Image 1 (tube, rainbow, N blue to C red):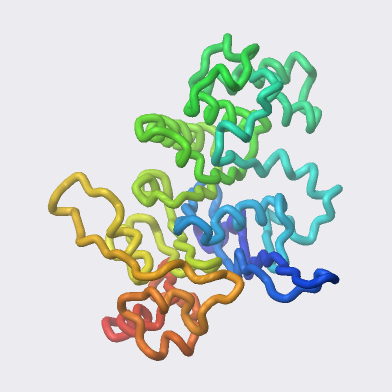
Image 2 (cartoon, rainbow, N blue to C red; image 1 turned 60 degrees about the horizontal axis):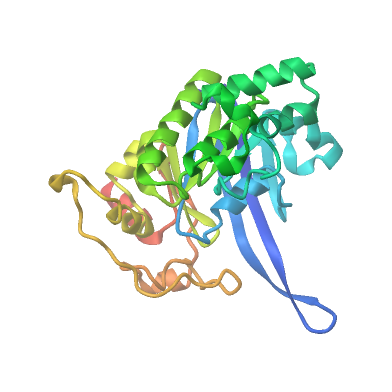
Length: 332
């Protein structure tokens, strides 16, 4: 992305907090800070992978961007429109351009609808073309994702998990979106099927000029698909970098822990496994200072007192760690 080219999606200081209520009158006593001050830009036809442990807020980021859950504050700008400021009536026409592929291919499909009805549903809702044209578009997309034409009249229970996920992808792409949130689309599938779906997503991105926000906890698939990676911990982005640079030299201690768990085929590429101590802190009562410091193997006393900023240490390389920032400054 050149300086003169605006990003397709720009997120600034996004927060999604859920109230915790107590007592007879259900007064708000605290908040679950599921997403807390997340910012990033996503260029056209690129893929940003959002990675981290389960419960870190990845899925909530994706749903907040699409307004499937209402963000507490922040700005989400898609093209020249600020999504967070739009009323629902004005947001509805944009739904065609903003789609999602859900994690569970079993619960995300209506068991009472045929594949034809499922894939055509978005086309019907937006009134795109005539009924015949919508049927033709649905059939085209089902074939494009690798299913036979005779799948159109069948029901979801007649398909395997991988085939169901292909149906979900066909449904999302039938309306010709520009931006797609892929919410852990591989996690419910066998390893061999994961590779097929990953290749399909990459081919579809090239064919249709798609922009992906790819949400996953599995770093082994990220290097193949993503242009940039953002690592989340306890609702915050702690490191962001181009995929190749992040895999070659992670900076944040949490990213290094995640990288050590990625399986390596070649013995010379393997690294010593780092096992974290303790559990993920509660997002209701996060630790003071750096939220990772209670589990961090290199934490210093200052880490418990001061929360670091997400600082840019080099072009495109951001890290939220006092130790990493100091070491980068010393090495400069």
